[in-house]
Image (cartoon, rainbow, N blue to C red):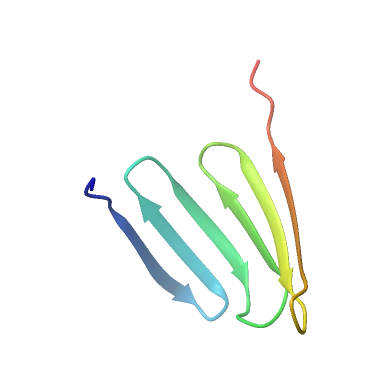
Length: 65
């Protein structure tokens, strides 16, 4: 099993800095509300947990030139 690195820091209420071995990301949002995440590789994710077995996630990736 490979060794991985992942760490998350709370900067402000509702703002998190997430680090791993290959990139970093910033997440805005609350635990039970909508969340928006931007990462260093150009991916933007919007997600929201809904009651029951439902959830929503939309991901966009910036196209490289």
